[in-house]
Length: 113
Image (cartoon, rainbow, N blue to C red; front, top):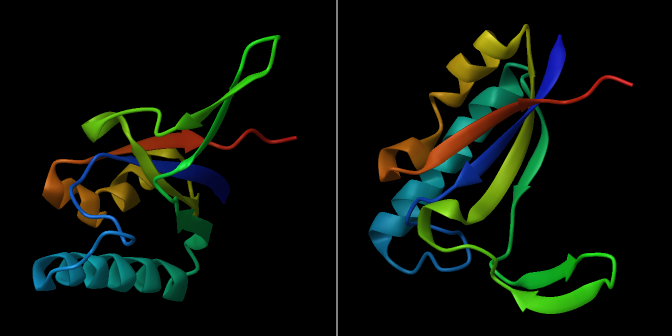
């Protein structure tokens, strides 16, 4: 098995701002999806990211407050999964609830040392 990172961008629902029943239903879909991955031994880790943070840039190490992207470019979280190969990882990613909200999943292999 290899490890892959799923990077989630976009979508309309974030756990920190879920304040309606519809949003809570989407959060429940995420919980169910991740629980299913865990039960199958696929889920290796991951978390939602807060919408705030800091950005350090360049050789002068300039620090600024962020949100660093808008809308569909905003990274909202990540998972690390175990899969046979990248094609298997892509198939696993297709079950992600963010796709139901026109978000995206970037599937990246984790570099072996």
